[in-house]
Image (cartoon, rainbow, N blue to C red; front, side, top):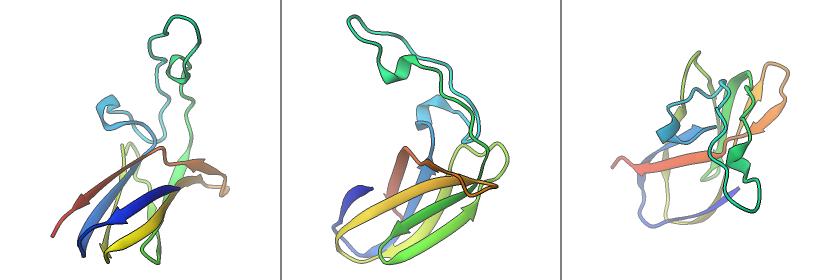
Amino acid sequence: FWAVDVKTAGEYTVELRRWPKESGTAITASLEAGANVPGVTPFRAVEGKPFAAVKAHLKLGGQELTLLVKEGARGATFKLKLKPGRDELWAKFTDADGVPMGAFYAYVTKVK
């Protein structure tokens, strides 16, 4: 989970992604390995394997929400109302058999 501290009440979007926005890569796609660095092999230097996600799951603000993952989607965006305070943001994707895969990126934006 990610520890969050909501400063102001309001409507927010939470976009869950498997890969970072700048990659432009779909949730279900593989990701080409990135550059290596001297000394050790970083995680980014390993190819990201495909994962057949069909659902995105979010738990935040006392709410547990699920969205279907659309074919070719780069992210799954939830809209929810949040109150001020500290909380935990839990997020994952699941395949058709219910096998989980972490949502490694969450982009939180206040709408109003």
